Length: 155
Image (cartoon, rainbow, N blue to C red; front, side):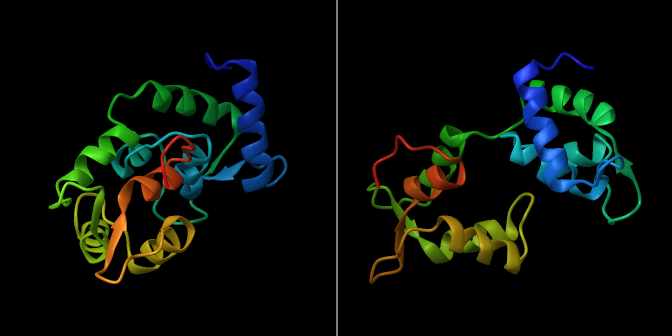
């Protein structure tokens, strides 16, 4: 079973238990979500390359098929991390005070790179967004910390 430590295999088994059906595995449509739930940040292109599908029900992945995918994605260098995201958002921090306009963040998420749709942005903001100030600014470090599940960032 791929070069995955026992503790990580247990985490993968848990993800399969939650996301999949017994004996059938997980839907390949959910490959990206499964990898993200294991603290990986694959791009959409990488998910597709690894066997993810664009439609539900086209293919199932067993845990034996998933473990080598997990191992490979874990080794990928083309994944963003908290520090990378902070550097990107600093471009929008015109006052250099750790804040940016919420509208600019929304625009970036909806239109740049592997953009999200309106519903995904709304869910992300509901789950991770600190309150904006009267001028429409947010502190982006706490947003990214929550999104990346970091606890060492000042709110």
